[in-house]
Amino acid sequence: MHDQSSLPYDVVIAGAGPVGLFLACELRLAGLHVLVLEQARDPHSALKQLPFGLRGLSVPTLEAFHRRDLLEGLVAAQQRASGAIKSAAHWMQQARRPAGHFAGIQFYQDNIDVAKWPWRLPTPADANFAVDMETLESVLAARACSIGVDIRRGFGVNAIIASDNEVSVEAAGESFRGRWLVGCDGGRSTVRKLSGFDFVGTDPEFTGYSVEIELADPEKLRPGRNYTPTGMYTFAQPGTIAMVDFDGGAFHRAEPITREHVQSVLRNVSGTDVTINALRLAATWTDRAHQATTYRKGRVCLAGDAAHIHSPLSGQGLNLGLGDAMNLGWKLAATIRRRAPADLLDTYSRERHPVGAQILDWSRAQVAIMRPTPSARALQAIIRDLVETRDGATYFAERVRGVSLRYDLGNGHPLVGRSVPDFKLADGTTVGELLRTAKGLLLDFSAHASLRALASRWGDRITYVAGEARDRLGLSAVLVRPDGIVAWASDGAGDVEEAARAAARWFGD
Ligand SMILES: Cc1cc2nc3c(=O)[nH]c(=O)nc-3n(C[C@H](O)[C@H](O)[C@H](O)COP(=O)(O)OP(=O)(O)OC[C@H]3O[C@@H](n4cnc5c(N)ncnc54)[C@H](O)[C@@H]3O)c2cc1C
View 1: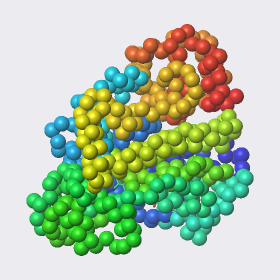
View 2: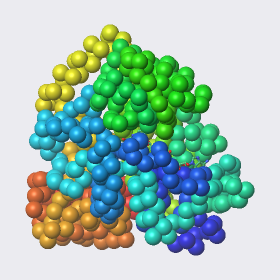
View 3: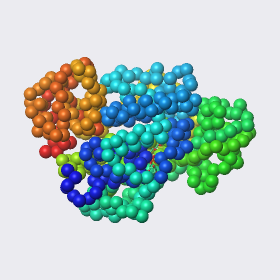
């Protein structure tokens, strides 16, 4: 396969963050030669560890990991750190189990009406799960290395030359050539800037602070999340604080973060005269919300924070980026292997851009009700009432946990465009397990001879599985893309012509 050209790599990825590493695994799984260039020499950083490195994973992320046999290893790795997570996350100590939050307003698991989600079946991806960035990156890097991805650390990409046939990048004084380049190099992406992507959106209203401090008088602060007339702070004992100061984002990266400055902001935001004895760790962030207008330009693609940035409120950025990688990986691989319909790669931007735009708006909406103004307070009170209703909690859970994700793949069965339910076959095999090879999947619950014949036409791209499922949700057959998205479904005898059109649409002729 690699003899298609003399280029050393099929894909060069800039950035060994979670998105770059997961994308590398996807591409390598499809048999491509992948190089990851990472600017930082050292993968370890205090900000990737607990408490600030903690990231909640959404349902689509957990499903993606389940479908690539990464979930169990990740859960095991997280369990080794779970003692620390318990003491780090203030919400994990509550009696009622929170399911997420909107601008800090929590909604609860016991209020969610899962009957509103008819296309879901029990799956290991249902669990609420959080992991620290360092653990996540180490699990992904270990997988990538084990399957033959070349990862080079200390190589920051600083120049790019893209032609019609290849991309050449410069990093640490060396030159690397590949057929494609993907920028997974984070919010200040060099690849995005050098390749001329437009990055548009809204400017920040606040500077957010994540600090680890030693307090002289911690009793002056209230534990948990607190809205005040001047901002918002979250306090976890003994000295972990996240806070938001509506300064128009002026402080972020403008000046060094000193103990005196953090104390002054904390006093202002908390309305107390609390004293900080020592500043141990500090980082700032903002609610700047920008998005690339397209995720592909010629032979250069963007994924993750390189393609979109927004405030970390309700924790969606990582999940959004991993969703990009799951969507892009198989499409880019099929394109490189010349097995893709002509416009397959265009559907990456077409499908993922609206998902990103929706998350940016979700984060803007949260900022709007966090403003320290009487009208925002009034809006907050309404949201508090809404999240306490069953419909309200279900709606917020759907959005925050990613359950409502559906790509617009045209008309058809209501399942088309959604994540495939984790059907369990009579022998106990699940769809998640069947997707581990990252091929398409035709599930034929009624064993139609015509569907079997159809699948054989795409034998190298689609796995055909016939057999009864323990709960088939009234369906007779389902065609699934390698990213777990339903391309076609039938609840009748099965329209083979329609199935063939869907197969050609996603897997080529
Ligand atoms: C306080 C905070 C809390 C958050 N909480 C959540 C949460 O709960 N859930 C969630 O989903 N998201 C959360 N996020 C967002 C999440 O951390 C990011 O969206 C995620 O890390 C993006 O992953 P990425 O791989 O795209 O980019 P990054 O993690 O930024 O990785 C980019 C990599 O590229 C490297 N790089 C940079 N420039 C170059 C270059 N020129 N050449 C080569 N390499 C380069 C960097 O060193 C880095 O390793 C939070 C963010 C913050 C700040």
